[in-house]
Every structure is written in structure tokens, then in C-alpha cells.
Length: 365
Image (tube, rainbow, N blue to C red):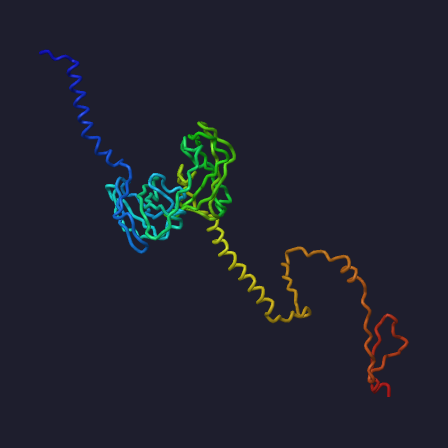
């Protein structure tokens, strides 16, 4: 072989690998670009419109486009969507390349400017972008100072703990606990921080609730946070739990709540019990108002005793019946009729029955 060494072969192979990666990697990295927003104009009055175009978003993501006050692109929207013109917002879906184009009507936000056009995702991973915009004729005030000192950031993934009980199956409010670990990346301690916990169902806006965590997080320290989360009675379906601190979203957790089948079973039982109870009440009323029938005469009742076969032994008579049968009954003396006279002959035996003769016999005459 010529003067080629194994080191030269290794160098050439490494060069080919680097060139191949340089040609292949830019394509997938293009999809991971930072979301961006551009406006067709930087200022417009109420009643007008502005065209919003975006790029670098997740393909197929559902986005919300709003005009928000008291915000800048570098600072974001600290007050959340409460400082935005939510009634005049528009929804848009990013195409396969992560781009979109949407016409947005200009409306005054509920707080003074400086204003921005705020674009954020509704479902899926959280992403947002802002572009400076001025609403003509709307008041402009200086931005409030940002709170300096301690700042909390998420250190570990959050999770929802807990389970539903029997009462939840019958429509009781579902409840969970949001557990996460935060760290203080600021220069001063954070004492008794106030978090915002929001629960949203589908594409509806979250319902926010402020919760204070009792404790102090020193600079550079960390703390385990546990916050209760509950829904309304009878809630079911897919929910999203969002945690915010200082106007920024720390974490989001999906929550699937089962249907309270106990309530359905209760209504089915009610549909069966109520008609049965009404039927029983109706029958009782009919029996009460129906005219009564005369009771049968007890003297006319006859007790039918089946005759015993001749070959069966007769039951012995009772003592009372046997004594009554042995007691002689008094003889009945027939009343003397006027045309009959008793015979008074002396030769009649005392034990013989008297002979009655007719008074008109020819022998007596």
C-alpha cells in the first residue's frame, strides 16, 4: 500500500459523517423553531382589523389570537388573559408546516396600553409569542414595576395524586392534589407564595383560583408544593389543570374524570319507583271511594261436610254431646181437642198408654 495510514482513513470517515449530519440535521431542526408572530400593521383603531401571520408553531396546533394591554413582547402578558380583549379573540389552526394567517378585529383591552397581539396554544404543549401593537385612541400608561427578588421555577415534573371515592360515583365534586417541586432562582427568599390554579374543560377558558402556600423558599433552595384541586359536582370528561405564579405558567396536567354513573342509576330507579307508588296510591283511593257490598247473612251459610266412607271408623262423640244424647227429652203431651176425651177406665194399666175414644161413640149413649 502507499503511504496511507489508518489515521488518515479514520479522518476521512469522520469528515464524511460530519458532512452527512450537516445535510440531514437542518431539516428536523426547522420544525423545532421558536414560534414567531408578525403583524400587517403596527397600529389601528377600534373597528379596524389587522392580519396576523405566524411561523414555527407545532403542526396542527390550535391557537388563540388576542389583543392584550399592559404588556410588551419582552415581558409577555403578566396579568394573564384578564388583561386581554377576550370577547374579540380569534382561534386558528396551524398548518402542516407550523404556519398560520388570521384576520383579527381591533378592540380595546380592559387595561391601558402598551399592547401586544398575544398568540398562545389552547391544547397540547404550552407555547406563546407576542408582537407589539398600538390601539389608536386607547389610553397608555407606564408599566408597573416587576417584583424584584425571589423567583420560583419548576424543578421536577408535577403530578396529580388522589383517587375518586364512592360519593364521586354519585356526583360528588372530584378532588385531587397537585404535587410539584419548585426552586427559588432569585436573590431574596419567597415567603408564603400565592399560586393561581386553573381548571379548564376542552377549549373553554380556565377557571382560576388563588391558593396560598404557607412556607418560605430561601434563595437557591427548593420546596415541595402540594395544592388541592377540585371540580364542580357532577363534572366529567377531560380537564386540564394549570398552575401559574407571577403571571407565568409553571405546569399543566391533564385530568380525565369518569362519568358519575350512580346519578344515572338513581334516575332510572326513580322512574321505576314513582310510577309504582302512584299506582298503589290510585288503587287505594279506588278501594276507598268504591261503594261497599252488603255482608252475607250468617244464618244462610251452610257448612258442607263431606260424607265419610262407610269403611272408615266414626270419630267418637264428644263428652258433652254424649251426655246430651243420654239425657231423656221431656215428652210432649198433646193438647186435648174438644171432640176427644181420655179414657178413664180403672182397668187400664198404669204403665199402658191411655186409650182415647170419641165422645160420640154409640156405646156411650
